[in-house]
Each structure stands twice: as C-alpha cells, then as structure tokens.
Length: 168
Image (cartoon, rainbow, N blue to C red; front, side, top):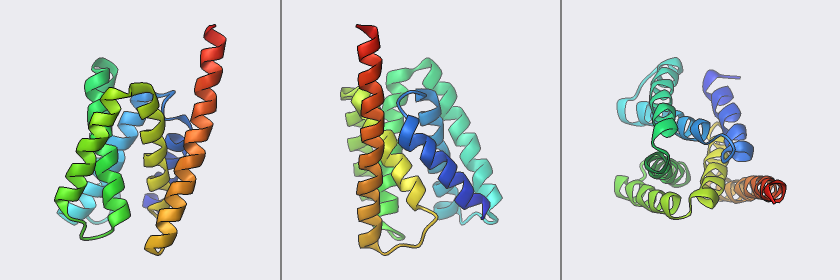
C-alpha cells in the first residue's frame, strides 16, 4: 500500500465518521487533502512524499487557524471541501472555475449551517478521500461517493442527536 493510498484512507475514515466532533482535525484534514492535491496537480510534485509534506504544512496551518477563528475556519474548510470534491468528481482536467464555484458554495453552506455543515462537508470530504486512491469509472465513483457520504452523514447525525439528548 502506498503512502498516498494509506494517508487518504486514514484521513478519509476519520472525516467520514468523526468530522464534526473534532472540528480542528476536520479543518486540518481538509487542508491536508487540498494541499496534497494542489501539490500533485498544479506543481506536478513527485515523489508522493513531497505532496504529503505540502499537505501536512497546509493542514497544520488550517488546524491552528480553526482553533482560534471557528467561523472563518468553517468558511475556509467549506471552500476546501467544495474545491476538493469538485476536482475528485470531475476528474483530471476539471475547469478551475467549477472547482472555485463549488468551493464558494461549500464556504457559504459552512457558515450558514455550521453544525450540520460540519456533518455534511466532513462526510463528503471523507467519501472523496476514501475513493481517491481507487481507479473507478466516473459512474461507480459517483455512486460510491453518494453511498459513503450518506453513511457518514447518518453516523454523525446519530452522534449529534445523542449529544443533544445528553444535554437535556
């Protein structure tokens, strides 16, 4: 198993099931995934470990910002998830304007509906990260994305309801 595959699978599983609970980690993981993809696609970075280092630097900075500026970080994380998911779903050669538009939509969603946005966006990021290492046809990738994101949203929603019930 390659470093890229392992990192995407671990980060994807954490985001899919626990993204809302560990907000700063969610933001850092999205920063990692976005930085990793940015290094690979824009700079053609090889070997894979260099992209991991770039991802760790971006993710670390994003996680630190999340600790101090939650709503700003939510907007940034929303942009990162929308951007990353658009690139993963559209595949290589995706138009930059589409990724930016999806990023802007993710950012608006994250700020307006903070709690639920964390659930939905972290599940989407986790689903995209879990699918990234596999070479799937676009139809299978879309079905896998929808199913995985749905499972992640369901698991996190149950956890959110349990947390609200304990506070009552």
